[in-house]
Every structure is written in structure tokens, then in C-alpha cells.
Image: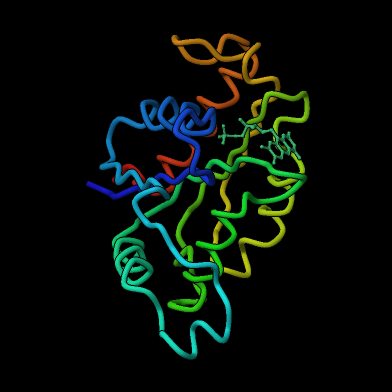
Amino acid sequence: MKKVITIAGTNSQKSINKRLLSHTSGLLKNVEHISIDLNDYVLPIYGVDFEAENGIPPAVKRLNEVFDTADGFIITLAEHNGTYTAVFKNTLDWLSRANIKVWRDKPTLLMATSPGGRGGATVLEAAINYFPFLGANVVADFSLPSFFDNFSENGISNLDLKESLIQKAQLFEQIISPLE
Ligand SMILES: Cc1cc2nc3c(=O)[nH]c(=O)nc-3n(C[C@H](O)[C@H](O)[C@H](O)COP(=O)(O)O)c2cc1C
């Protein structure tokens, strides 16, 4: 079974991106999910001097080894002030020091959500443009605007958005595990 690493770009315990991520994972039935919580990889702030003095932290090496096992990634980004959260960017910077192909040239489903009407579109756009330089093969992207209007305990309530995500999840699954 193919392995999909799921990661939300936030350290919030009540993260709406984690809720979207968990819902999306549930749409993919025939893959093994490896769920990464950034709270399990608490890292010092990246700095060239810190790295020169201390090397790459063990938690970065651990996460990098987990990424080696991935057949694909599902990433959901929280937006802080129009860009990545500090914890996500810091993790990305450290991972890029372990392996510049952070995303290993694997198929990637890239998402974002926020309580606002743009649904994290700014950070999503940044990642769509930049992640390929870190080895991402972005096969689909999805933004869920106005999270608290469009998401309930049953999943996405807006039918158009619900259908759109289902199609993108299916496309992602077909790409990582094509039918023989
Ligand atoms: C410091 C800070 C900056 C924020 N900046 C933005 C922003 O630029 N755009 C946006 O849509 N939401 C912004 N928000 C609201 C977040 O989208 C919201 O907190 C969301 O729940 C974050 O995702 P998470 O719950 O998955 O961590 C900001 C929130 C914080 C705390």
C-alpha cells in the first residue's frame, strides 16, 4: 500500500487545517496515512550560526527519515499574515538543510483553509509557486474559504466545494496508486 504523509502547517491544537486534513485523509481509502504533527517535532529557530555550531537537530533528522518513506504528501497550510506560519517555515528551513528535495519529487495535494473568505489563498499561491523548488510535484490544490461556514462535523457542507475536494483527492490517489 502506498504511503501518504499528511502534514498541517500549524502548531495549533484546535487547528482548522488539521480538521480539513483529517477529513481529506478520510477520502483516500487505499493508502497508508502517516500523520505528522509539528508539535511532535519542536525545533530551535533556524540560523546558520546555530547550524554551524550544533549541526542538524535530531528531530529534523527523524522527520527527514520519515519523509524518505513517502509516496505522496497532503499538506494543508495555515496562513499567518499572508504567509506560512512561523513553525511551518522554520520546519521547512531545517528540512531543506537535511535534503533540499524536501518533498522528494512526490505527488502533492496542497491545501489551505482559513476563517476568512480567501481561504488561505495567499499562502497557498506562495506554496504552489515555491514548493516545486523543494521537489514538490503539485498535482492538485484546494482552498476552503470561510471554514466555519463551509465545514461541519460531517465534513464540507458547501456542495460545490465538497465535490471539488472529492475530485482532487481521487486524482491524487489515482496518481500515487494507478490502477494496473
Ligand atoms: C498571527 C496571525 C495572523 C493571521 N493572519 C491571517 C492571514 O493573513 N490570512 C488569513 O486568512 N487568516 C489569518 N489568520 C487567521 C488564521 O487563518 C486562523 O487563526 C486559522 O485558524 C489558522 O489555521 P489553524 O487553525 O489551522 O492554525 C491569522 C491568525 C493569526 C494568529
